[in-house]
Image 1 (cartoon, helix red, strand yellow):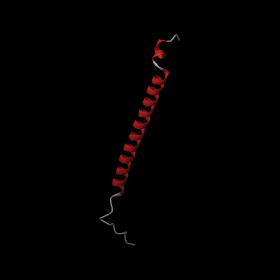
Image 2 (image 1 turned 180 degrees about the vertical axis):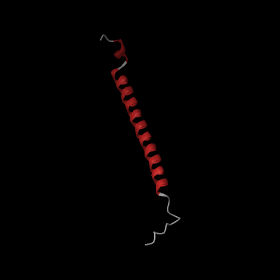
Image 3 (image 1 turned 135 degrees about the vertical axis):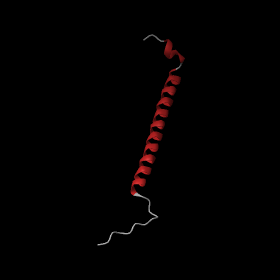
Image 4 (image 1 turned 90 degrees about the vertical axis):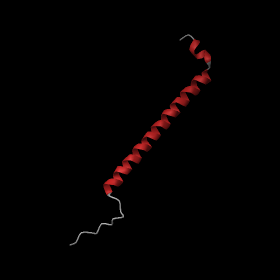
Length: 59
């Protein structure tokens, strides 16, 4: 039995997995930054909607 010929144009499988991991990490970071941004926006909108009297009220 002969080994299948490797095509020199095909990228190495390990290189593909490394590139995939890099892309996945970048995607995860982008999603995390998007979520943090949404949390900050919702927090700011909540404070704005409650008005300036929010901090001077009796608890």
